[in-house]
Image (tube, rainbow, N blue to C red):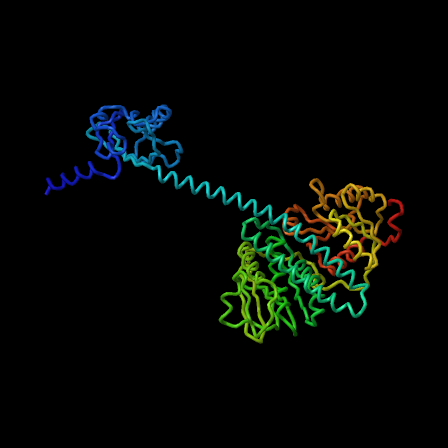
Length: 519
């Protein structure tokens, strides 16, 4: 039995899939199996008693000596090459190959020996290099996609912005028999805007270009913003829209959190023909629950598991298709980024409830004395028409915006660049509002222009900043900008008017002409 075991051991040593070499404490080869001959091209007698450097490329022998010395000072089972990019072995013909080597020390009496199992890692290295190259190419493609999205967000929205404003201006002066056609055109523009926003948003999320920027977000502010944006939409459709107050602060990304709620409320209004849409908040032992409920058409039970899929739309009771089916896909991805959970409950004909669960770890109580109820009430009272300094470098958008604002009763001065806008700074009066595109040119932004105007006049000049890539702009802000509203392009005309009226109502009552002297 022992003889058979010895034979097996000898056979394994000779024909092991790995080349096996044993060296002594002086680094001389004392044993080599037959696989060494196959791998290196040396006859066994050519290697015995030779220094191990025989199998190492000359350019690496200096490093090998230091590695061997360090290893012998503290021998142990170890894999070489795991972190050494230039671990190569040399064949008898002088060619080299990437080597993987595992070392195991042992003693015979007091003498130290090291067994080395050597394998040709050329194929593995090629695979690794291909993976690295593929990852670098994917990173380049991702960066290119991010650049495209930033450009598309601005450039694709500009012509829609022009059409939207011109349509709104024509509605002000059109004959009654043309008004219905213009209203139909307005609905088509709204649909095109929603589709563009959804496509750009989901692409930006999938590309990994968005990283949440945490901040303390008062829930009252977010709910007030929702009420301001959607109340007029609900009224136009004859639907009641209610937002219940909540006195909490959420630690989250302000822009993404609003986008999450915005998509759910927009979706609820889109599929509700009568009744109401309500936003309510309930605190629990483990989480805050925000529910967006509606009395709309509802969703069949067998379709609920697919509603978060991209481009999927439920065909419910012959309801018409609206959008491209990306709203809830965006909701799902944004909720994942923020660490929230979103679920949908629905029954056909009885409405839908979209439930956002925000773990308590993201919540803090609002400061005592804060009036959360007042925050969600829409501003009342008569609006006032102030004078506007419009700064927009796109000729079509600038002319359309100026025309729209003039038809709304504003006195407008416009400029196509930051430099030309600064010429008009001397005419700026309290009560005036600046409306500026964020991306003016390669050196200036509308926000920088607003900052310079404020520094010159010594007070927080009211400003509206427009951007085709608003989420990125808001995410870049280090601190909130007082007395300023940020709106997305293509701009909602009602939101633009509301922002100007709200800002001008707190900016003073000076009604002198824009052509008057400086304050």
